[in-house]
Length: 488
Length: 107
Image 1: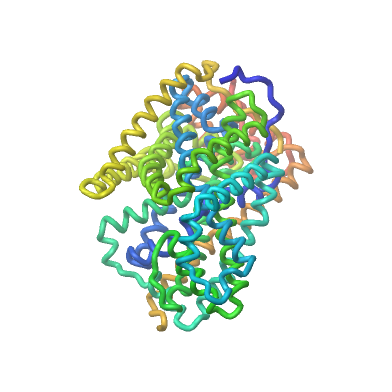
Image 2: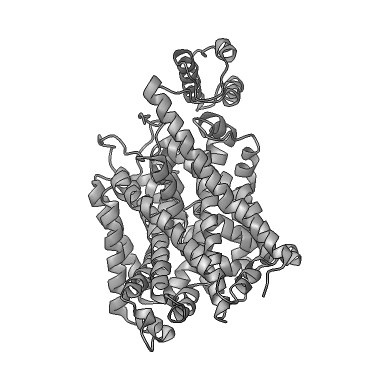
């Protein structure tokens, strides 16, 4: 770590629209499109949606407000934020935990973006409407070809680096300002086409018919909690990092909290309309994950009038959703590395993208390795990272202090005292519950060994990170540092 | 298969609670930014807190004199008070009487 050499003025978002699209783009990902429709249908349909929307407003919105606020207040990335708030070298270790979990997540998310890119390219080549096209064989041929999947993974990371190297305003903002509106338009168009197909409403019935008795099942609430918390990107460090590029007159609660959480879930709802009517209209087996997109839906495009065009619209929208998430996740590492080392922005982009590319090779090569990484970091890493960030606000700064000094400053909506207990007690309790539930539900299953490995890894990661940062971490100034405030 | 009434109601409520709210928030957020930029161009400065938020900030400073963040809180409070006295058109809904009653806090 360096002794904070002089840097040029910190970049800021060029426009409110750019910031909002970047936040939503970062949080909308594969999970919204290939998991939310199925999770909704499997867990009581409309009843699940009631539970989910309730938890979204009660937990995810306040949580995202807290995370974005820390970034705006400290004007630094994850390690810098922990340094400023905790005022200890060891405390910066928790920032390092968030960073490592983030990089690990991106290492197996990058191959998923690569899949989307591959299918988008083939939709443009009109492959899916060629006579004799076999979706299952096409998918297996792709996924079992190491040179092809690693090549696409490399292309993906190069593409992300190519955008990130231009920075926040000229890189990320310029891309998301057209990708996200196009994603929304594409999903609406596919949704209208799906609903108007004969039998398409059966898909809507599967998703929206409420089974109220499912609200009495614990599994429904756990599924709703997981979807509400993790699909909104809470605790990934993205809201903190993007929030750190806000100007002094920018609002946090309305954009960083409410719009990000609700906008992200709205795109999940559009995905419901875009996928399940088509699946049911063609009598396919509803499923979640890559099978839904790359096999089930690829199967129907040849049978749709204008199927080639619909395939392009659909797979391009899926690529936009995953690529903009990739930008957000990778920027967490880029911002932190450029602040904590002597590397320039370009050097940081190359270093972070290079590490992610290298760590992503096993996931690109083997989809079962990808699933194992997802289980370990999705089940145990993310709650740990979220807990670290929320504890920073709730137990170190203090929710009332954070609310009166920064959250309600230049705000578009006033946040009342109700926010304090939610951030201080409810979100940490929920995270601990999810961690515990992940452990207990794995006992006696095929995931038991992986669970033990995951828990052990997170414990070691926390201990080693705090130890490492207590040696190499940058000493704090001994007093609460004010964020440097620039004009708009 | 036609959708049942309850499925229709659930679907419409979900659309209202998600894309409906998101659209309203997006428009409101962009409009507030537009107003802030207009005021900044005209006055060069903006008040940072609403009357309710500034009142809570003052109360917090009074009850937490030894908090490590209190210096920052005082600075932000005073900055808002001075700005309100300088500008003609506040961003938040401040009356002249409310501004008149405000006093800076000793830093």
